Image (tube, rainbow, N blue to C red; front, side, top):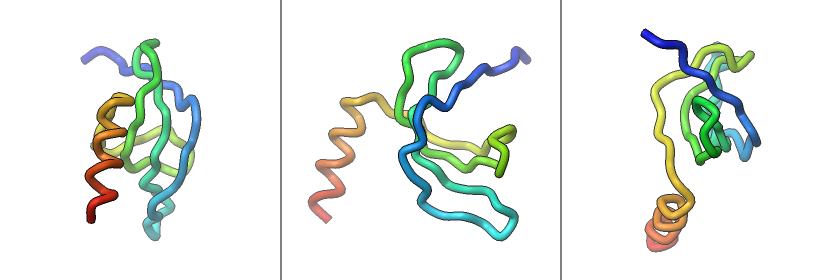
Length: 71
């Protein structure tokens, strides 16, 4: 399996933290040298390991903001 290259371009915020120090974070992340996208997932304290997450484009984040504004 090929290595996944990533760079956290900007940390936008932490939603929660587990007892073991993993944090659910919203970041701008560049995956495999591509333009950065919004990314929501769990990260280990040193950002060397990650959990499953979701990556969103600017348009998808705008739509999500619109939906969340209705609840």
